[in-house]
Structure formats: structure tokens, C-alpha cells
Image 1 (tube, rainbow, N blue to C red):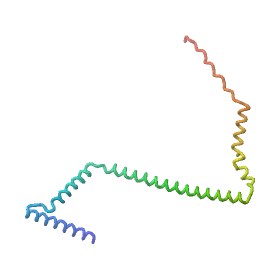
Image 2 (cartoon, one colour):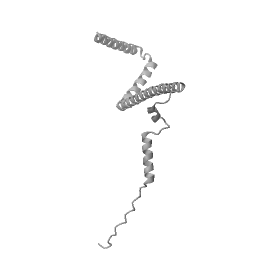
Image 3 (cartoon, rainbow, N blue to C red):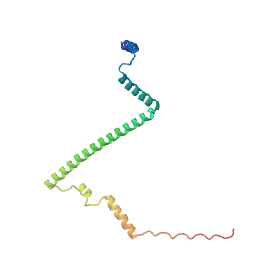
Image 4 (cartoon, helix red, strand yellow):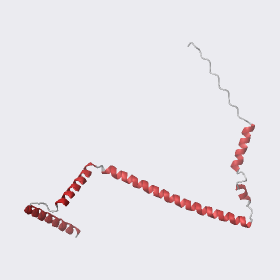
Length: 153
């Protein structure tokens, strides 16, 4: 059915074109002259563009720009989600600390070790290494003297 409609429309358009040409030939002038001249100029511009533009490069640039925009939008969305989670966790921690301070509960033994006042195992190890290096400084070996060379070989 679609083919039949397309064929009929094509035949009607061709018949209309033939009728317009015959009317113009009888009257000796073009109908809608200004409009058709403007349309001819636009058709010339379109023809020039199709003849001189590299559509492959243009399409590639357009695809790259679209991909960059999509990547930017995805990264922005992830950043917004991470910030939301961060704010939620910060609020939860603040609420728990306030509740603990109001009840007067002390820190458990595990939390006392992780508190900022007590050094961590890594900090204690680093302090021990520094103290050892202060007690036993490394001496730099003396530069080796160049071997004497025989002037005559």
C-alpha cells in the first residue's frame, strides 16, 4: 500500500510540473519568480556544501563532542551522588557523636586506640625507626680514589 501511495504521489507531482511548464510557456513568464529564484539560490548553496564538506570528519567530530558531553554528565552525576552520600554519613556521625556526648558514654577500648590522641601502630613504628636512625647515623662511604693510569701505553 505504501508503494502505491508513493507511486501515485510521484505521478501527481510530475503531472503538476508538466502543467506548470505548459502554463509558463503560454504566458511567457515564470510563476512565483522571486520565490523560485530564492529556492534556486538555496539549492545552489546546498549543492556547494555537499560538494565541498567532508561529512566523515564532521560526523566524527560531532560524535566525539557528544561522547565528551555524555562522559561529563555521567561524572557530574556520580559526583553529586558521592557528595549526597558524604553529607548523609557526616550527618549520621554527627548525630551519633552528639548522642554519645549527651549520654556520657566512654569510648570502648578499640575506639580509644583509634582516637586522634593515641598514635596508631604505623605512627609508633615510624617513631621507632626515627629514634633508631638518630642513635645510629649512617656514615657515607668515602669516595673511591681514581686508579692511577699509565701515561704511556
